[in-house]
Image 1 (cartoon, one colour):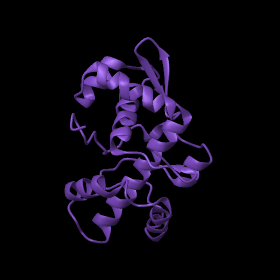
Image 2 (cartoon, rainbow, N blue to C red; image 1 turned 45 degrees about the vertical axis):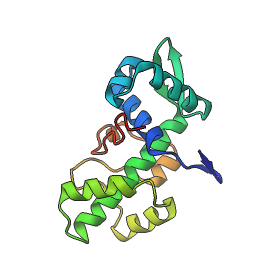
Image 3 (cartoon, rainbow, N blue to C red; image 1 turned 120 degrees about the vertical axis):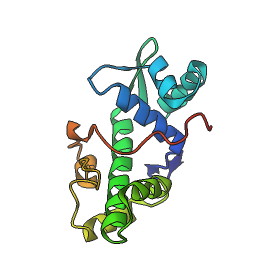
Length: 165
């Protein structure tokens, strides 16, 4: 899962991070039962994979069946939301692709494009503040400097690999 000095996180891992983020928005820890339900997997399967994410430092267990994103996990997820929003904006603005189709395409490639390329695209687009759906886009500078605002709690990215792993 590690690539050079940064994480190359799988879609499965990001789905788990997103499930935790979604279910813990109100400041509460995410429950194992909610995580497994959202992902469409059994609680024992979710528990096993969460243990792996804990070993990578992306998730912390904060009680029996309770999980939170670590700072590293939150930054990893915010990088995905940033990449997804920038790609969506590019597809809609430059290629005039329908918003729904752009979201679907961005979901398929947002993990494949390196941060450096997303930075270039973001710069060419004038650092968009919102994706075509109207959700706030975090920016790499804010993520890198730990200025992650809670305004990024909504995003159009969805759990993509429901029970397919």
